[in-house]
Image (cartoon, rainbow, N blue to C red; front, side, top):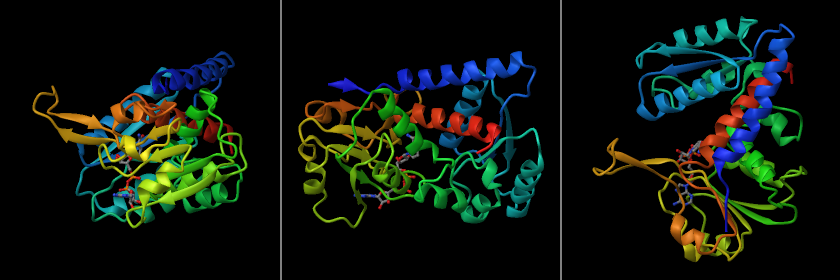
Length: 290
Ligand code: NAD
């Protein structure tokens, strides 16, 4: 059984990006620059943004982190985005989700210039993705495709099941896996909270992407022998024995899945690291121009 190690695959992506930034530096060019906006102080969001900024530094990118109070007016956030849209030194804009309830997420996403939308959430970029055009692919599904590519996982003609239909993971993942691309060409079934006979659907899958946010949801009896398992879930589960008071759990029962799968992503150390790799690649793409 192959462990699809995100550290290895992400390091390969980052090494290529570092070579590119070093070449830019040698040529006296400006570095790609990512601007991240964090609203409030949600613990998980703080961790994600800090990691994105750190990874920018490691690959030679510039980065700025703008922190806004949890009760910031929506208009202030929109004004910050408008300012960054106009800033010629800023290539990519990322607004860390989720946002506080008084701020309309869709309005914020649509305020970002599609040419700087490195999260790939803007409707223009989603439309381009659906049509198979050059675009910013949402970082998590993009990272998964990069992971499949790195480990030479064959997808053509396979049955893939995606559990979860969110705009940031499940839906774009299902589109990519069904697209006529190297790591696509699957027959895709997308499942959600109203899917009947989920176990039987999963048992027909050669590839399962679990992105629902329910720890240990995918158990061994739902997996066909030899299937490839991609675990997107990240849930903080309280655990008094853990240093931080919680442990990160994926959506897959790892031990049970290992007994059935031919390949599997660990949590942590799998898809999360590839998400950052996808974001960095999108930022380089924004710098170079779509
Ligand atoms: P979401 O809550 O927006 O969507 C969850 C989806 O799962 C929904 O479409 C829902 O219908 C489906 N679902 C919920 N319960 C289900 C059930 N019992 N059976 C079948 N389907 C069910 O979540 P999201 O933003 O897509 O995130 C999903 C998980 O992935 C979360 O744990 C999140 O933290 C994690 N995540 C990880 C990364 C990463 O980089 N690894 C990135 C984004 C999200």
